[in-house]
Image (cartoon, rainbow, N blue to C red):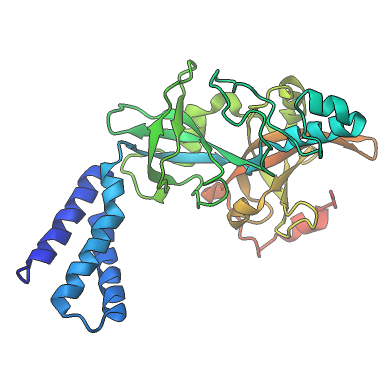
Length: 354
């Protein structure tokens, strides 16, 4: 190839990536330099021209799948990233219980094999699709992860609330920026909700890229505009939980002041903890913060924070306690206090709520 032909091809690839994927062409040029350096280090016996040819073949291969995919490009913001959970856990537990009570019945009804291994006894999925794994031994676990946010594709006029379920291939495996504007690619689900929201399916090379989006609303405006029905005052959270506890998709968004921040991981669960209070300071709500959100705990007591999560209740010392299993946290900049600068007034009035 002529000396400048490879450079021209890199420039063309960068433009195609920028036009179709919305990704900065500079990223392609940066990868080109990395690939060129790698090939040069691996094959220093090659001429510079041949090194460039090999490096470009590698670079083009990296982007070929991206450019050919029919996945749509979206921009938006994620407000909820749930903890990955095992969708087979209850099936394993039920099968074990059945086998313990009556092994012959467990085998006859398809719960387990003769050794007590749990079997997949679903002939069809909830969608009506035939289960090809029916009667086979269940895997030890199958993790999925739910995320929620707002997004719009290039052919949409306004953003919509969206949900996405990450499969075991991606659940807990990728970085998901929360309460930041992002760009990403996804596939619209064939079956869409009828409530005005949008269901998206993961894309093979799914990445959420933080980016500045001109005119895009901030986190507080997004919560007010798109999730106002989920807003619950701290003092009303206990009653809200009682009214919604049977809804497996319940999601509460709570804005309140922070009384305590404990970034240490609980030895049993791995969760950190923050305590929110109402304006009177009399009502407290503990928010359990999972490991994948611990990096958001960069604020201290007296900060004002928006938390997203799933409610729960228990009784401790004959006192009913309402908690929030955190799935999203945003410290409002105007009211954010540094973690290391805790006001003396807060320290003197703090109580142990473990």
